[in-house]
Length: 455
Image 1 (cartoon, rainbow, N blue to C red):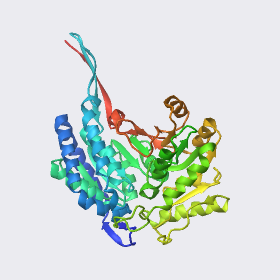
Image 2 (image 1 turned 30 degrees about the vertical axis):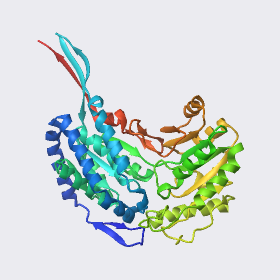
Image 3 (image 1 turned 135 degrees about the vertical axis):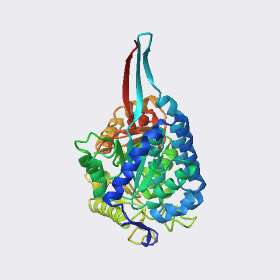
Image 4 (image 1 turned 90 degrees about the vertical axis):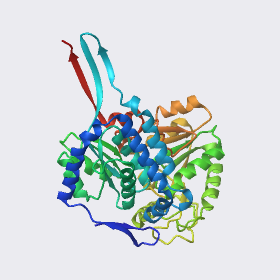
């Protein structure tokens, strides 16, 4: 049984039985049978059906927003995820014709030589709970548009999300066997992958989860896309707009209770700006209202689960014991459980877990740096590489710094955003592969060459 324990009050908000091995295999078989017919439909039809399904999700938004608050704790004041959900799906629909177009090498009296992009078949999407709609649509929309069947396995913390998406997509006319929401335990998922059930698997989650996916896929040659976490840095140069940098980086560290894949987890500030940056950051965070996410006045909700909050508390306590300075007093609403006070730490070093391991919570460490070289050294001193945020008024300087950072995406004067026109990717322990953009389509299809000699 999959159970969602609501972070609001610790009650069971939803529970669903997992598929048996035979039920899971039946779902795969139905998807494989239906996929060929789906892929044969004109691209324009697939695009239109996916766009209609996305619109149906938007029609449910008033119901979805409080559901998200109950499942993973995001305050209702932020209105859910439909803006980003729609932006990403719409962009992928817009570029589909060009991204999937044949590459014609020759079409003469003697030969037709062309490279086509063909779907993998059945794509398994294993989605996380922190942005459950937006992370899922990154793969679901382009996979369907490209002609694949999709099976969506959502996190146990957000079981209603997959049901909502299936309800919307089926109402829009996407066949039930082409888009299936499935409830699978870890062992059944691994067994299906090991049995070559899927042409491609996209997983967003922990490093341990990604390693389990890789082990299951070993020897199968199944394509994998893995986004496995981050410890994303921000760097405030000596010529930065300080107010803009503080506002954006602290929001990037604290929004969604710090539970963002590309959230800011460590900040490096030019020595000349360091003291002022910390003062402004503390002022912002001290003004947050921690509380029930169903209260429209709440700006910081609970973490999705008590065990996640416990890990953040442990990292903070260890850092303070090692000499870090904590600037935010414990909030009255901090219950020692899922409701966790935000924290800003200074006097931190890279010997502390809070500056090395993923926190995925409302805490950020801030360090002064001497110059660009010092900042680059510290930004690269990490096992992860998802995004980095550089703050300067000099584009050439930003790009020169970006060239030296080991990461998947570099932002200048912004943070914590996923641009669907660019490849969403990472390096090191953050994982492999790339989603969205034209590269997302390339990963969700395979090239097939046609060398046709005319008689």
